[in-house]
Length: 173
Image 1 (tube, one colour):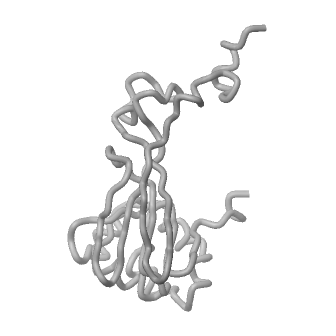
Image 2: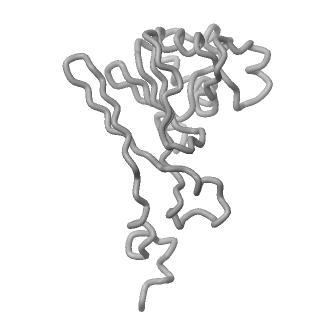
Image 3: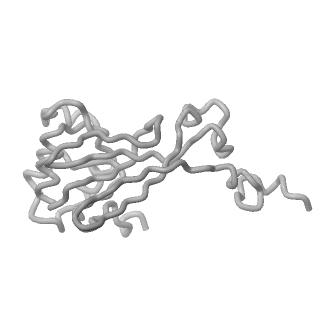
């Protein structure tokens, strides 16, 4: 089932993915067009990569771990190849719930983190995800301009047993 699920979504000039981009050497070897993103290795790498503050992360460093970093210029090259201008990703815990990582004319990268929160009772009491302000994102595209509007997720309702099976034992019988 997992192999049949898409791991990214392209909508106009926006690219949505769990992690990030494939390694530089994988792109050089396997890129033949947008359909290349269905390659098993590229799919896997897009689940686990994370942005860094440098322009380029050397391939040798990227190969050291399944969870690897990529740089700003590598991101810009990838976005140019896929024909997109903005990437929305998750994967990394962002305490504020939303963060603009790169904001360049060649590409915008934002991280969105929707899990966690102080009042999310699905989490263990000591989880550092409780420090997160979970956010969702509205995206509006009008007349060539994209507006991002992050908003707070309130997990309070999901702590109620009638909405969350994890708490069904609390329902009165």
